[in-house]
Image (cartoon, rainbow, N blue to C red; front, side, top):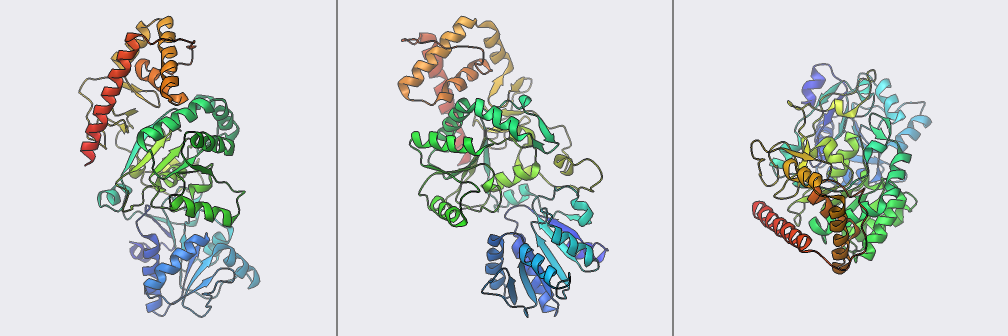
Length: 489
């Protein structure tokens, strides 16, 4: 496809391929062909990890290469193929009259990140093929640098072929995004997210911990928080719940980060929590679960996060995405997001406008009543449940509520009875040692709304009505879990 694009006159195609497609191997094949024809080629990488990954693959493929990255031991300026870091290339150009040594083609890894030096090279060598590689070609103005978008395969096709790990999506409490302003079409205002997260951190964190124990207990997990303070608070609460967790941020040295990565990958602790740090440059196929409580409007960020758990692993039958950010409701299944065009730099930049449009308007997100995973439309992609014809449902961002049952119960129950029910939930929570979020979730399960306007009081007894409702809820969930487990097998 790249050859055909170049033959038709496009010297700057982008190959947009998902996680696990094998972009490094594809680059190696192209550069091996270049080498075999007596030509010279460059492979530009923006991270040290990508350079080392490329070194391993290129060596296996019999490529004669050198590495341009600081004082790398594999430095070989005479080799026909050069693997180079962006920083080293910038220094080389600066020290050699603004030009690179002669070459016949180049590939740019993670080309959605637009470095000035790459822009200069693309502009200067306008008659030499320079091919971009990325899974997320949604950056502003990317179409001004590259002139063709090649999509060789979709994430869903890779998933169907067994090259990606299936993901189960579960929803939970998140901040009220109606109170959060936007910086632009692709990002929320950071200060608003911090304010809403800090003011609701107890409820939010309680819901996160409850969901983790319900759906991902004892699984290797990474977490994303809107602030470093909330990440640290989440870690503190998990540790108090008996779950080993660590916080990581940009202030840690490279050595400290590597130690945490290795310890987490070895299973020495369960949860590695951050704000943004693990979005890119972190690849651990054994990680099975993501806790996402960081709302985003960026397709790039969402796809990158879910991609952290989509790599296959021998001990991972499926991955788990705990959505405490409302991101699934915004974007839907990450495996169905497919790039459709490059931003031309002229029209307003909205990443979602650059993806392949659905034939019909996206259905409202809801929770499947059988397996409790997030679903869109009338059929659950995970367990196969279909919504009965004519049944009306609504979803308030976290928990499925059947319209006729939920709203009727909320409308027909007095404030006094709601307060009694919530108070008795708090008593059960204290007796059983449940998390703070358990009460809110159970209240919401019964009435379809959060108990924001209901104040619990101290009580020493549990009514028969509440006791029976809790039993019914537990039985219903147990049956659904058993059925979902059977479907998975």
